[in-house]
Length: 152
Image (cartoon, rainbow, N blue to C red; front, side, top):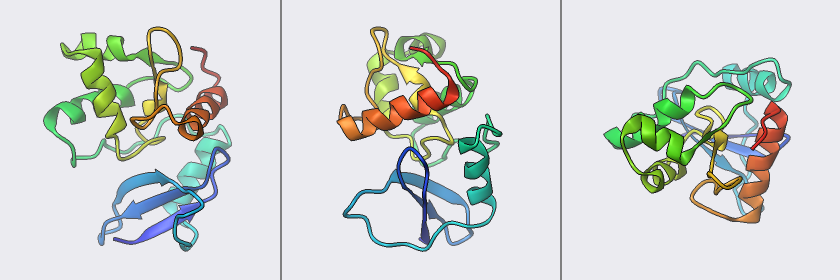
């Protein structure tokens, strides 16, 4: 699976593609990540437009790699407008599920930013991000929400 790096202002990203050049996953790049060629083309343009504030919605379907429930959560997340947030409980209510299950599905989202799981917050504040309360990942979530002008 070919992978490329993208210098996002929130943190460097790694984008994984299938052999057919379909976007499969996005990861946060760390100091231990391998050196990769820089992303160019369509996805670089899309991310440039998002980070410059010109693009608010990615026209890309949620991953088919998850369970049926995860896909339903990811679709619900994709429907949250730019600059707005919803709680885990809000999504759970829509899907007839539990907030914890929604949180677990959010953490399994292979396409953060594209499927904007950063727009899901807890009823009492920011909540977690990428199945973590890691300060590095929470800072990315804060950055993305601030970039979009969202309040939580």
